[in-house]
Image 1 (cartoon, rainbow, N blue to C red):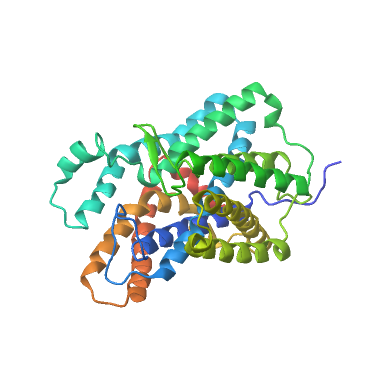
Image 2: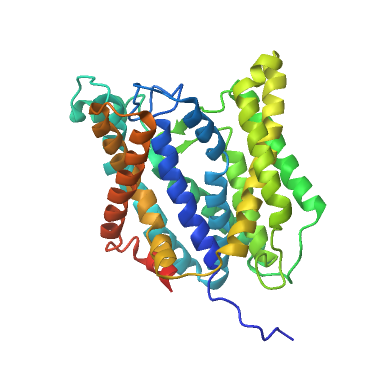
Length: 382
């Protein structure tokens, strides 16, 4: 007989976690403008006083931001597919994800990418850049909208998988993961990461594309798919429900801290003690996988135990998280560029950039909520 204990209508902690991740993404992208060894292709790089501390923060946050997003997308994706007809599922996904992806790539990605020329004072008009360098040249990019495109491909994989195996749309009795579950997750991630490193000669930061429909990172995409599938697995096994799996903060949070420190340290100094590039890549991949797993489950543990509720502030934060993600890149880079002119300590600049960047992004996100693509985000307030 089904338990009579009332359950929350939403897993509010997942809404709150997604909002946290988007906020972290924004301050992470701002930090890239101030870090030591910032990539030259970055949209706005303040070279006045680059800092190793920002590099360390970027190395740390870069590992788990997107896998958390893909996990949540997989969890709710299979939930939607199990409840909706094929037509309704794809109409909702194209309205909320597919069309914003296409519009973002066509109308916004080019001007945002143009900032890497504009902020460096390179004399080139926006029109020339778009025609010669972006749409038909080497600077083509989906900017942050690559995530939406990848989601549409992952939803397609999920959809066809459920056609081949209809039982995937059925929830099973609540089942706790075993040590084998985590071992299989780690091995899958490790094997695919090492294979990807070999494929791209160890270039972890490489972006590539299948023009014009796909932009991806070869060393990250396999793990993104694995964590998306893990989200599907979690829904089927009723993780986070009353009788389902709940990550233990006492175990996962210390692991999150320790593996994060070890991973960042090895990224910075590993090549000094590991002269063989292949050995370095294999060790780094192992640390990457362990840190990622610890981070994801550590965040689940903290948010489910401490933030599985909503209020006016949290509801507003969650409701605006998608539109803040959608709007943020160009706005925060303009703020960073505007701050170039001021002779301020770099940490003061960073704090100001974060405050102003989050502020203007929030205002833009409120405006975007009036569009039909993003209206569904308001459900997070319920």
